[in-house]
Image (cartoon, rainbow, N blue to C red; front, side):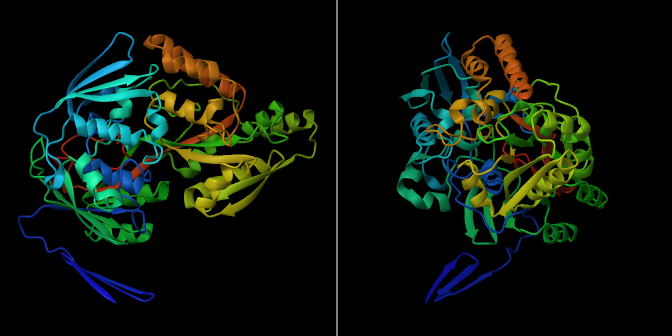
Length: 520
């Protein structure tokens, strides 16, 4: 048996038994603490270049900076502003970018000043498939060089639609401190070191992560002393803790009943944020009968978007209007086939299926995803389309859909809000699952390759938008997929919390808690 004492936590290991006794953090009258409840039983790796889940990304928002950031409270790339870099310039062909870094920025934990060498290390780490889940975002980089202590040069093999978008403090754009990452190795994922307003202090498995104010933060010491980031899987438990005042911010549930109930609480509010998560039914054209356009059109006409949004909740969802979510740079409102189950049946008959069709669908057991697919199953049955659902746990779902085991794939995704990322990952044929360059093209779509790739390298903004618009039209006309609805993130927020900015969007999914944020 081994006994380890860490601050106020006592963790005892012995045989198959595990006992964890975590004492509450006694807060002094003057101490300002914000307690955040997240929908998870635990947190995964706390390495920003590896973890991609909402619980982790929320945490990273508080710990790390990017070279640039989106102005707090916004989600659109048009609001990009300096972060660790104070200014930048690029060559006429957009292939060489030079960034000038802030002087005196300190890494957490006494790891020294953040310099161009750290920035170069971060980008090369993010681009390395062996160390990063986001390496495909940086495949166009041909070189990264620290010209001097505060000057960074990045060169590209080809034009990237939004260079700055990939350098925001989201996913691979998070800047890590080289010395800490190299010294810690695998332990870096258990003790993240960044430059942000809050520093890692303690991790209690299946309970919480504790962060404390960074006294050396370059924008000023935070007004909050500590963040207690608590893992509470069950929505009922989070809601109760919030209602009792044990939480100040709580990750919500994306349904109307939850929104309405929590909105009635005294001294609290519910906020919904963008970018939304787009729920799309991808149709596998490599499987019969989905190789027939008429069958795919019938499926599109069997789905009542507005009715599903009404069921989901009009305050937390909206009908999809393209294969790219609304609000993304490059989004174009694209007319889709209307709901018409009678016409859908006629199309199936015309295609040689007078008795309808049956599709084998692998489906995750996760709540909202499963619930949405079961709603689709009931609606599509009215048009003679039978979905044979094989319910599996989430990891198996992800593995199977990447092996082409499903005729149709309901996939919910939120990406950095620029059209290229969504189009490239889901609709460029180079991203087709099963291929050497696979990403998430589950439909085997290839009708808009020319436009997607042209937009990716187009330097004229108007021409780029035109290419993106045409790409979306071609994908919709070919019914590679059926966009269904967009879901906002929802949070319950105590009125005691003063964010210090107006919240409309949160590109990192979590609510940014910054140096100006405080609590009464």
